[in-house]
Length: 175
Figure 1: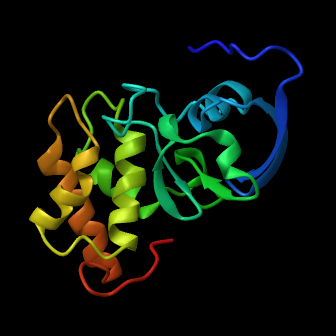
Figure 2: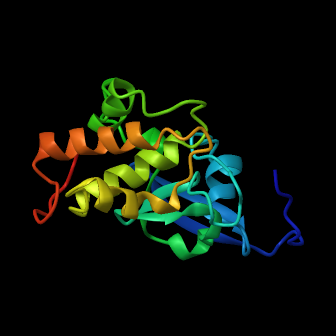
């Protein structure tokens, strides 16, 4: 857990929509999006892995694009929409198709990297980069799994891409 070194009074206002809810909070100027999500908004599904942008465990969507939240200044998200793993599934308790596919294909072992893997996997399909296993592996290369569940992760992504018809060349949205 990081500690703020900003003297009191140097916090700035941030308005951001997180998982569909508008948030108005004050944050230190140097606060990362990851720390704000976890420590201020108590959304602990996004994991702090390496804290250096090398493992992908902290991947969230900002404006619909995958971002490493440990390298994203929270204030750079002013007025934007942020989606975390907690906001991925539709209301009503159903799983997002990618979450269901990860379970179906046993695409997690310890589960620590799973939220970041799922957020990147959704982006992979949304951006029509799931054409074949090589393309998926290239897109997902920024997400590390210490348990080596990579074949299962690729299978889960291929499953969702096949269901949605959004493998390669057909841009669209996986809802």
